[in-house]
Image 1 (tube, helix red, strand yellow):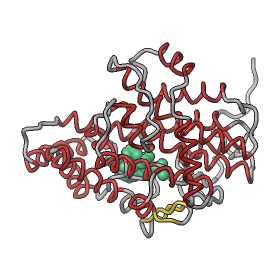
Image 2: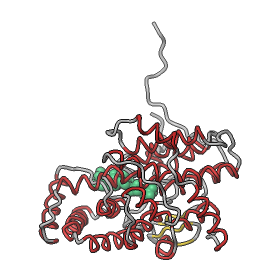
Image 3: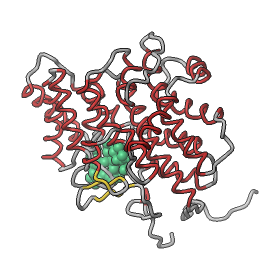
Image 4: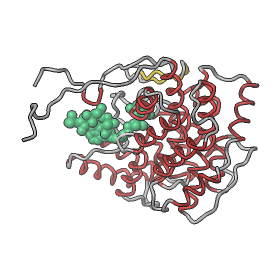
Amino acid sequence: MADVDIKKGLAGVVVDYTAVSKVNPETNSLLYRGYPVQELAAKCSFEEVAYLLWNGELPNQAQLAEFTARERAGRALDPVVKTVIDTLPTTAHPMDVCRTAASVLGARHELAEDSSPEANMKKAIDLWAAMPAVVAYDQRRRRGEDVVEPREDLDYSANFLWMTFGEEPVDEVVEAFNVSMILYAEHSFNASTFTARVVTSTLSDLHSAVTAAIGALKGPLHGGANEAVMHTFDEIGIRSEETLEEAAARARSWMEEALAQKKKIMGFGHRVYKHGDSRVPTMKAALDKMIAHYGRPELLGLYNGLEQAMDEAKAIKPNLDYPAGPTYHLMGFDTQTFTPLFVASRITGWTAHVMEQLASNSLIRPLSEYNGPEERHVP
Ligand SMILES: CC(=O)SCCNC(=O)CCNC(=O)[C@H](O)C(C)(C)COP(=O)(O)OP(=O)(O)OC[C@H]1O[C@@H](n2cnc3c(N)ncnc32)[C@H](O)[C@@H]1OP(=O)(O)O
Ligand SMILES: O=C([O-])CC(=O)C(=O)O
């Protein structure tokens, strides 16, 4: 075999420039268009962050008013999308439902064949505005419940919770949800964003790029990990009567056993961050608030026990999916709905990258080193 330096998984390979976000593992920081994500999470709405990702600057008041009006006008569940969802079995994974909905919305978009910057911006906003209704309705139909119409008087996060649960959410829960949406929005050339860029590089359309990205996000090594974290908690067993210390002790034993069996533990580790994920402290603070709000210390026990045992055994730190999973669980989302929530947020980052890719496109087509049989001939 020729001596070729193969970069498995493209690890450590820089493939292009991006001005959308900067992930810096040395300083353990994440900037969206120059702004630290922690500051955005503390001071901004998800709508402002979406605007920032797409336009490069935070909106002024007038720009925000126009932008939020567009988002609110696009919230209702498209009746054709509803009909298509209704044909899918309720056992279909919600990520498959999201992926199907993104595809249907693309085929039905009034600018389907137009990939101009203006058309792509409209498609991005429309898709972002439409996805919460898809995620909310899919969870409701699995519970035998009907659609809840959107409320124009609520912001993105409050309306998302309203459409899912049919109850007006309290401010604390809305804030934690808003933080999660901001933290999930963008993360440079992760697997799903890179997928979206590969699709875009062929001059395919924005909805195709997002549909493919949803497929990439579904896997448990990527976005599917937030769902998988909850499966771990369930496997250990959530016992509401337990104290924090008792739950932590059981979680520690579970982790020691799992690591002894060389299991990969979802919600831990990261390709880029090797000393902790920059977003975890902010998401963990939101989780802490939800644990206090819902009065569920045993969940903190499980969280702490797993984290400490993993740190002692392998010094591998949690990633964003680790605190996000139990946060969504506390809010009342079905475990299978967690990754679709990630989709709803990441649509902003994906489509910002689609537009950036198109603005300076080159077909993405790496090389491979052949290691199959030598040339041979059909007898
Ligand atoms: C929002 C997001 O997408 S964040 C990522 C979400 N994904 C997960 O949580 C899935 C679990 N984590 C993982 O599988 C990995 O950490 C990844 C895929 C995220 C990154 O992995 P890579 O950079 O490719 O590292 P790799 O998988 O090679 O791991 C390096 C070493 O750490 C170990 N390791 C890494 N993560 C974990 C983990 N979660 N549990 C146990 N061991 C782990 C590997 O077994 C490997 O050990 P070895 O050298 O003894 O074989
Ligand atoms: O960057 C990555 O590889 C995965 C990740 O954390 C994300 O997409 O948010």
